[in-house]
Image (cartoon, rainbow, N blue to C red):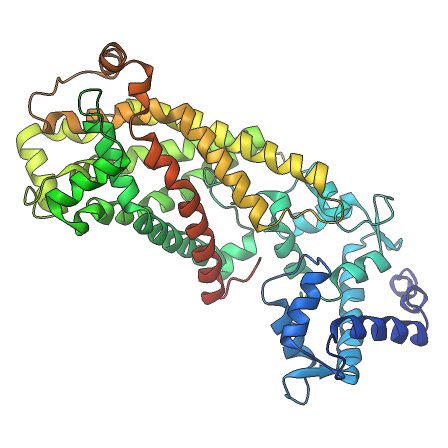
Length: 478
């Protein structure tokens, strides 16, 4: 026997006797077979897995049924169920040994980091510890075979790469969860094309979300520019006025270019983030939260700089009167003819300055809320769940908006002021002084009500469409 073979652990010694395994499988089958008909169908699988509180990959119940239903009758009898679990445990044992680099029968934090590193994904010691703690039941800060087996037995991941991909996209790593920071991808994901599928899914989600909340977005712009102490415009009067002027369809003015700019903005932001991340990271294995914030903010600033003329067009199209422009091209042509090239950079400075407070507060509040929930309410999982994440995202986005909204309002006024007859052509500081002197601090928050109103539907629509688009494109990592 070769020395390499001698160093391998005895696989059989880690397994209990067959009678014990079958007893454990029988208990599990009885838990899932709620109607006691000797078969577990897909509904029983779905309900049973949910009742057990397992953190599973997408479509787990379909994958289990597909792998175990040998007679294709739409359910699993006990024989099929035990055969599936036996094959599943054998696969899990091979995965366990591939992660157990030193063959000591336990997976520790450094081995989790090594495995991520081998696939081109860099995580910190703290991130690896959170992954380990989500599986470690006896608080030894290591994962033994039984803990590994019980955690992944009904999670139909096929190999170590799928396990790592599943961990990478779990919320414990916060990759792509915060809207201010672009997604990160491993080398394999970049080579196989998963990265562009996820960017497409995100783009479609953004387009549907923006279209669904476009009336509130146009109302916000309308109130930012036209609301004042004199007219006392509110949400209802603003909506009524827009409908009276141009009909129901007018509520979506400016949405076309708002959707059109998603693709270039996302692509530029992603590419810039990748380059800035490399410059910041250097020899480090991962970016800390503060470094991700800096990289995300700089990437956002780069994207905003390049696509900013589209932002000006969006504001002008949202504020246009019926028949004023024939479309995007006509709007751009008229602005260029009447105001010159410089008109397309109006409001650029407050827009750029607004990125930092929004991105910083959004990311910081999101991280703080999510980690506080994990520490206080989570014991057996590192995944807070969809509702908690949506709540964290909504609160963090709202806090970011409150901090950056005055700059956003001044930006919109600067973009629009040349098109308003009699409006003073002021600089950023001049506009701040003018608003404060005429309307007070409250004037800096005109239109924030519809802005708040669109947060929850925008986040919810984005999440639902994003998850369904990933399934449709074959990216089922969550």
